[in-house]
Image (cartoon, rainbow, N blue to C red; front, side, top):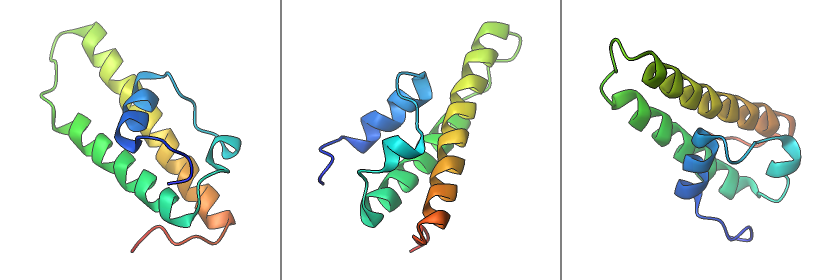
Length: 91
């Protein structure tokens, strides 16, 4: 891996808002790394959705939704970036 990043940790950082994904951020990733990163983000999203919903706790609901939104936006950005570069994310 040329970028030298832990993808699981990177996905957690994105969910927490420490890292912002944009096309410039994705430039160092090659096709295989981009596929792995996309899969890692989808796993992170599934993991967050599997956690029990915090009914009646407004702050926890807001935090959960913000995390899901950040991960969803990163996944969407990766899909669009891959489409522009003609990279197939489905293997």
